[in-house]
Amino acid sequence: MSAFDRHLGHRRHFTSGDLKAILEEAGYEAISISAAGFPTFNLYRLTVLLRGKKLINDADGPPEFLAWVVMMVFAFLLRVGLPNSPWGWQIVALAKKRNG
Image (tube, rainbow, N blue to C red; front, side, top):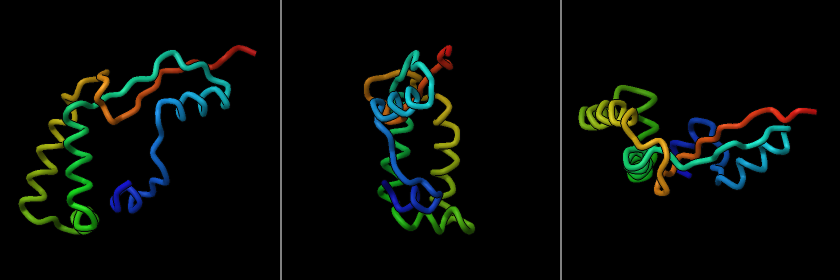
């Protein structure tokens, strides 16, 4: 987990198994759980990790020009990541409420 994740209030990252267990405990049936976002989200996450605490300053104030350009490029590219790939680092679930 990056310093930026903690700054945003994230407490942990989940695996597909974690997400399935949470859904089932809450009374849902997991229809599908997949890894999404490859390759763009993976590159974004690597950039966040490499930028470290400097990204917090970028988010809280006016970013350096290069950081701003990178953020704008990722804002566009995050829309074109693969929705289901074995290499995706973003976990997405489709679930339905169980009867009873």
